[in-house]
Length: 254
Image (cartoon, rainbow, N blue to C red; front, top):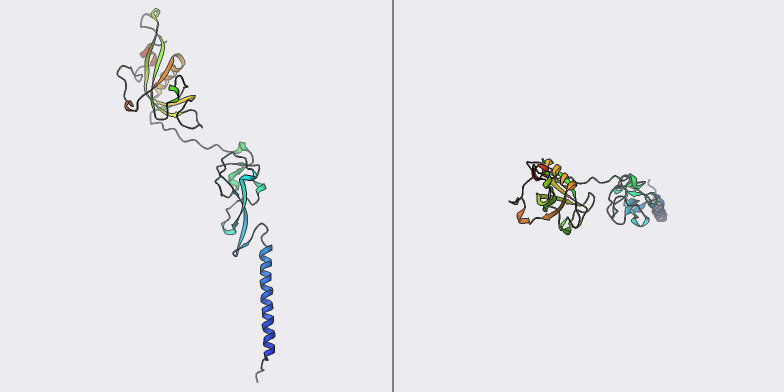
């Protein structure tokens, strides 16, 4: 014969069940606040402290406290090898450019500036069979800084001329020696490739022309003249090219 459950017993069981639920809920809150050390629980997902850049950081820059901050990442989105404390990166150097809001990882940081590997420069646009040669310039010989990349220049040269068979009749003579030299760079490597007064120009020539140009730069007075864009690749009819004959044979310069 079944035993009848009294209503009073039902109320006791209900109260006891509510009490257990409250205890379980409080325990879950306590665990959520204390677990994780550097992280916590947000929206049911554990978070981790990660060091991120507050602004763009150029390579070789020493990391200071204002360049980094701490941001919380969910555990499953934390970048591998990320730094989790600012003091692990402050005082060190950026090995590569680091973008703003990017997490810092160990490949981004080196201990000293000397460990930063310089970025490889882009190749010069040298056509096959040609060479690039750097020639000195300045305001007086470089047309006041008006030469810019992809321009064409001629070179006017002044030197002593020795007529064949009459060395005693040497005289100074001025003529155009190189025409249509193609400028591919203004200034030395590492600087901005823009127009303006600079210490050097880089030109495209054949290897034979490079030899003749070297002789000209070492032994004569010279000045560059800037060609019109309408005359690119046009040789002036009153000049003698140096492609086939040597510079000294063509111009009889000592």
